[in-house]
Length: 91
Image 1 (spheres, rainbow, N blue to C red):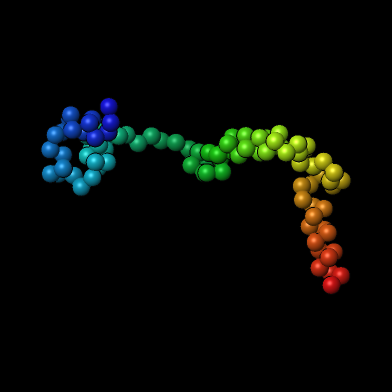
Image 2 (cartoon, rainbow, N blue to C red):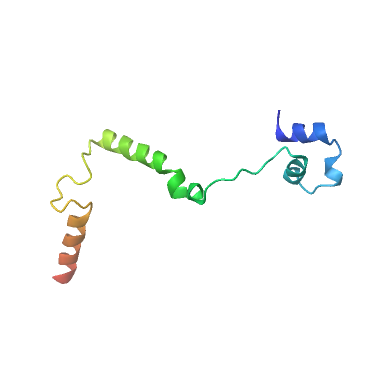
């Protein structure tokens, strides 16, 4: 049953008193707020699993090994930034 159908069943003439379907549904108790921790609202936290799956699929498709492979310092991208700095300094 859709939200509109639920509101219509409880209050058929809801359009007279409410500017939107969501206002009517909230007042009638069809929609209820849920309390959650502020950390769960961060997009970076909410999508960590999706990003991790995408990175794993990318590594699998392109045959990429560990992020730190071939990098003696163990930090991703450090070798590239050093080369670019050296190139700029020699100019």
